[in-house]
Image (cartoon, rainbow, N blue to C red; front, side, top):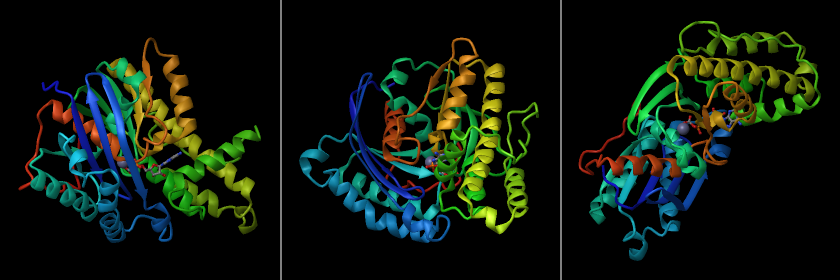
Length: 352
Ligand code: KG4
Ligand code: ZN
C-alpha cells in the first residue's frame, strides 16, 4: 500500500460530459483543487438521446480547453501532478478514446504515471469525497449503483474488491426514467424532469390514479427488471386522451407514479441486500442517486435497520464527473495499479 500524499489529474469522457479535475490526497485530507465539467446535454437533447459520434466530436472540442483551464499546460501546475487518471470504460467507445488519447499523450510527454479507471468504480468513490462519509469509511459497504447504463447492487469488501450481488436483467433505472419520459414527450434526460414533475404532484397531497407494476419486487433474488415498467407506462399513457396528455397536472401525476415504482423496487432490493449481507454502511451512487425521493426513502429504510450508516455523494457529484474518477484514481495510485501509455485502450464493456 502506497500512503504517499499525491495529486491526481483526472479526465472523464465516457458519455455526454467532458470533465477534468485535480484532486489532492494527503492522508485523510482530500481536496478537490480544480473541477470543471462541460455538459453536452443540450446538444443531445435535440436528438432525444446521446449520439455517440456527436459525443466524441464534442469531447475533442472541449477536452484541451478544459485541461488548459485546469492549468495543466503551465509547467508549475503540471509539476504538482503525480499521476494522470482517465476513464477507460464502460462507456461509448469513441467517446472514451478521446479522454484516453489526451491522457496517454500527457503521460508520454511528461513521463508521469497513467491510471486507467473503471467509470463504475468512479461512481463508488464519489461518496468517499464527502469528509463525513470518509471519516466513517469502513467495509463492507453496500453500494446501489444507479445510472443511465447500470443498475447494480455492489458489495464493496475493500478498496478494489467488489462483488456484484444483484443487477438489472434488462433496462437500467436511469433508462427507465429516460425512456418513460420520452414516451410522455419530455426532453432528454428524463430523470431530472420526472423528478421535478413528481415533486409538483407530491405537493397536491393527492393519490395518483395510475398504478404501475414493480417488476421482480417479490423475487427472492437481488436482481431487478425495469423493461416491463416502460411497457406499462406506454400502455397507460396511450390509454388517456390527447388533451389530458398535454395537461401539466396529468404529466406530474404520471411522473409521480413512475418515480414511486422505481424507488419502491430500488429501496426494497437494497433492504433485502442489507439483510443478506450485513454491511456497515450503504451508499447510493450514479446519476439516479441525485433523485431526492430515492434519497429520502433510502434514508428512512436505513433508519429502520440497526446501526447502518448512509453515505450519499455531494450535490453535483451524482452524475458523471472527473472528481470521482480522480478519487478512484487515487485508490488505484495507493495500490500502485498503473497502466502503460503504450498499451492503454478503451474498455467499453468493462465490468467492475
Ligand atoms: O451516472 P450518470 O450521469 O451517467 C451514466 O453513467 O449513465 O447517470 C445519468 C442518468 C440518466 O439516466 C438521468 O436521467 C439520471 O441519471 N438522473 C436522474 C436524476 N438526475 C439524473 N434520475 C432520476 N432523478 C434525478 N434527479
Ligand atoms: Zn456514470
